[in-house]
Length: 138
Image 1 (cartoon, rainbow, N blue to C red):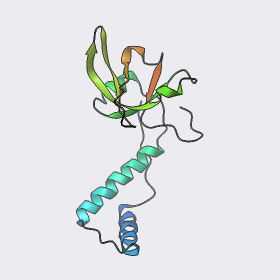
Image 2: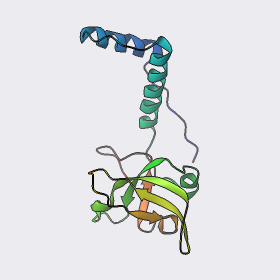
Image 3: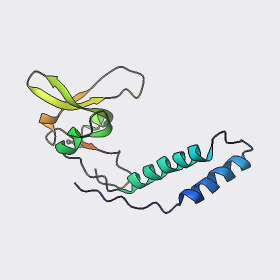
Image 4: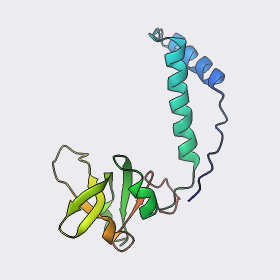
């Protein structure tokens, strides 16, 4: 899947102005250099741009290239909402005859781990770059 990043409407210079202005309003000095601030703005701009992308299910090929990165896992069965969770891609994981998959992350302090294998991808689960937003399919 070829993804075209949409440009952010906020220039880094304007974002810096906003950040400096916010710090002044709160009377909280920013303890960072202009480069650190620019780096933070760049990361924020990248996040905003990614959030603007369509949130289509990833392919197994894309997942294999995302080793160590987070994905949102969604059950194929719409009645099985308990299996919607954040997970980390483990492209090199092996168990018995199964190879590669995702491992859930604990979000409530409970150390329950779910594992979903690439072999079952599309049958019981799908993965997305982020959770679907209100009104968004996925």
